[in-house]
Length: 413
Image 1 (tube, rainbow, N blue to C red):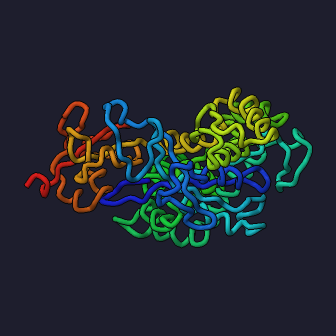
Image 2 (image 1 turned 180 degrees about the vertical axis):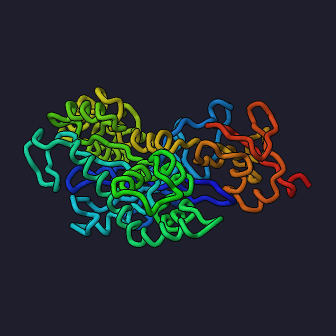
Image 3 (image 1 turned 90 degrees about the vertical axis):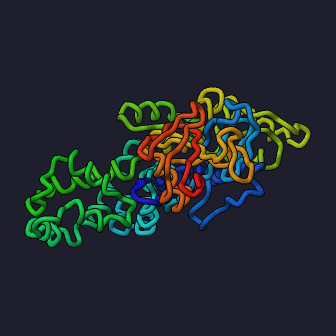
């Protein structure tokens, strides 16, 4: 998310992968709300879009107050902040040329700011998603083909009028640049000016002479742009199956950002929580049985297997960890808490720490004001950092877990 001017849309995560790797299970597990959220207005947006949650420690315990969350939920000191997830159609080789559900898949990731690639770490599905003997398919091949598909999709979009655009840039005179032209053509793909600028620099192409680029230089630039604008995290799924641990280590050795995962285990825990059989919050390292008498022997054994085979060796099921890593590491986000009353940490309704905002690192005090309300940004005077009661100017860069009170000309009057 880029905060330029007054408003910015929330980040979205795309859940991607070939068929039969557990992608839909991951999406279902991530969007199945904890029981306490049942009455909150966070529901599925479209059939392929849903609400997941970013997990972060709430600041209310540090300040020793009871909070009243409005835009999120606080469960025993854990803030769960709603975020958008996009469940993309299964991808197969040749998708960028329209094979399979390729066009649908690629349309769906247009609005995704980062991608979680669900990979069958057990190697039990081939490149098309057909079931094979565990360990007989290389999951690294899946990662490489998906990267290629997205790069070629982006390249195909740019190639449509590349020659004309390149000549226009080279003969257009002052004020016309490749950066500006690309920004206009790629804005519908959630690709920002900053992404393009970094890609032009990193790929080493001559931005003043795009008509002279070789095919390799062009594809190298597009691939670099993909990596910057659609950063990728690998969720190594099916970690309870044979060969998965070995392949997980191989993926890590390839310098991919990998999180071990069992989406099936997370979905089972979420459903048991929904029925109030267990006490479990997304991302917990364990669960507590609440109604043992309501469980059959088969269900108790299944829960015990999840504890022994997933939670104990991995620490979590990996679903929540993947979402958190996508926001905090890939997208470099922080969480800030705006309030009005710096003594009571409340808003004008008296609600304590009502809102938790997810913003990119580098967000300034005034940019936060604009995110809250345009009028608040327009009339910004200064902000106060609550912990140290320190006044901050409009260009002060916020830090993770900052609690901030914004003073506008209207409030000052």
